[in-house]
Amino acid sequence: MCGCIGSGIARGEWGEVDGIKCKVVNVDTETIKDNKNTITVMLQNTRQDPVEFGTDCFRLNGKVQGQHYTPKSGSIKLNPGETKEYELDFSMVLFGKGAYESLEFLGPDKDGSAKYNLDQ
Image (cartoon, rainbow, N blue to C red):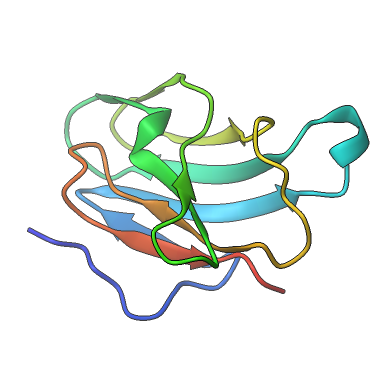
């Protein structure tokens, strides 16, 4: 089952893959001097069971075709009906204005896709 969604979801709008809702809450790219580039997402588990997955279910897509990055590894745990905010750490990537096109959420099973526009 693919949760594929057209050209992209606006910041602050919910998308859903495999029963996990996600929205981009904040993109912090203004702090390159302290090397802290983060994207904060809100996640909600609409499944009937607890879910745990790695941050590698997220991918930052560059403007250059085929260029993408995963955040520093971490674990995300959500109980049924739970909503939590998570900060994805991309400190190893120099953001630069307009260098990135979208944040992609592949879902806990990595078989879906919801793309979030990062341009504002």
